[in-house]
Image (cartoon, rainbow, N blue to C red; front, side):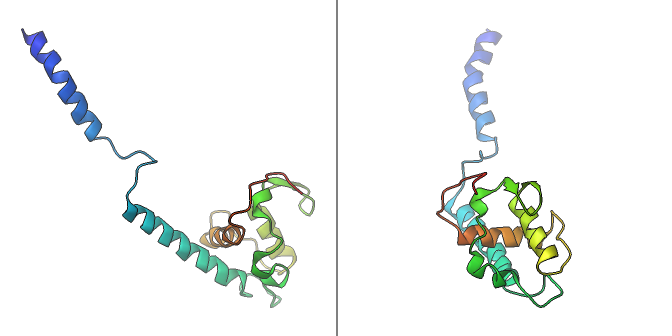
Length: 136
């Protein structure tokens, strides 16, 4: 008799357990999406300002001196072998190479907000371009 009562509770307990689970990665609200888009926009806009400023180096130049509006940066092709660096590289490696060698600046730490901001802006400018890792 106790077993029968317990078996009748199993579906209800299972439903409660499922309801208590956190939302999955693919479950979000319109408010979540709006918040995430605003966070990205803020980071991207900071990257745009940094890209067009001379704050990254010591010689008065900026990234847009060679790459107006992030032209010819091709973030969609990374990771790839990068001749200037002499090995496989990510976009962030090439950003730091340019900061050091073209702007006469100090490389950004890989976990710095500024590097993320630059990557966000560069990727935004190339939005819609098909991914092509390794392409030259």
